[in-house]
Length: 458
View 1 (spheres, rainbow, N blue to C red):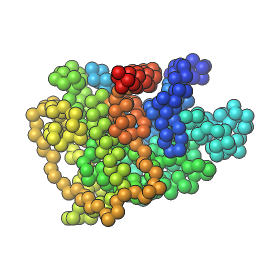
View 2 (tube, rainbow, N blue to C red):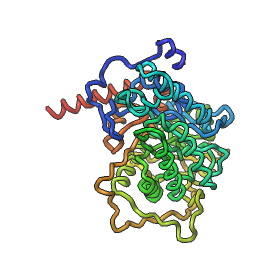
View 3 (cartoon, rainbow, N blue to C red):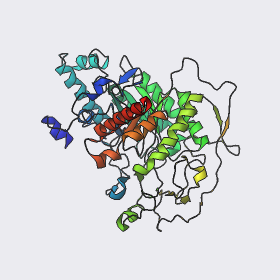
View 4 (cartoon, rainbow, N blue to C red):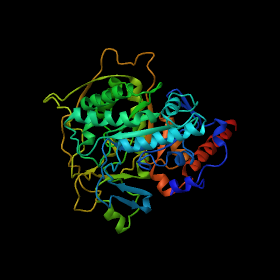
């Protein structure tokens, strides 16, 4: 719908010039963004509508995920709505038209911009735009905005063959990278078998290092920034430290905290009983997204901010065995297990005491119950040892954090930013809130700032 309406100039768009005041501006990757709100990948998997999405008001639009080769994803139905919770469960499985086709769309977008700017429409004109001669970021093509392109591996590429995995990502980057301001490496979707094992420190370091190498080969004066998208389910100190170590060792620029979760949180408000039809949908395999994710996202942002700011550390493998590249070291959540969270070990001090979560790598034949004991078996985890000098180099730029997961209003966006993120991304909130969601969130942020200013004066 956005694509068709945009072709006639009738697409929904943000009105007014509120962002021109600069009151929500943020600095990242050497750029000044108009505001700190972005859209998450999944809305525009094939880069069909990045421009209409920007016109809804975000400063960051993330397209993808894009796989190297085309793949259909999982069989339909593969997305399920829980209207009472404003939540979704999806198991898309990276349905993608492939990196070459997506790159051709992005190339055409750049060439049309070059033509409209009076630079021509050929390859030379395209390169002039990519090299910054048009005075705009080469991905977004808009001042004060950045476009991220997310890449992922094909389902048929085994996570145990790390060289093949690196080729998947690096080759995809070779196609789409020159048209991105930010490249996002997705290792956190719950819907591609084995993908999350790539978050273990050794394979993740190798993967991110391979992507960094591919980005250096992009034919453009300024290279895109690189971020890695991590799971909300890998939240222990050892897991977070290992991911941060891979970020430092590989030299990527930041982390996107959050994705859909394999767990199933309790309904909101506390004590609410889901309609029978929605309760049944909780047994569907896939990743859950919705307002219940906010507290978890907030806690994870704080943890990643602290870990990244502390600088590099050394992570030893488990003592009883050395991990093989691409194999889990026990930090993947166990399959087919109902898990009763202990509030004292929750990632957030704000989490409800009755939160019950379920891992749905396999279908669960029984209804959810808050009285089922934690059956998770212990497994070896990496041990953390501080090196003599763990602080980052004095001139090392601060790693950037984007956050996504359960952000639905301006107050929550502000909390996420105060916890250490630079950009708050939304996805499910837009599905339920519609085209005005971004504008509403920014207005709520401004209203909140005005109230705080009034209180401070009084």
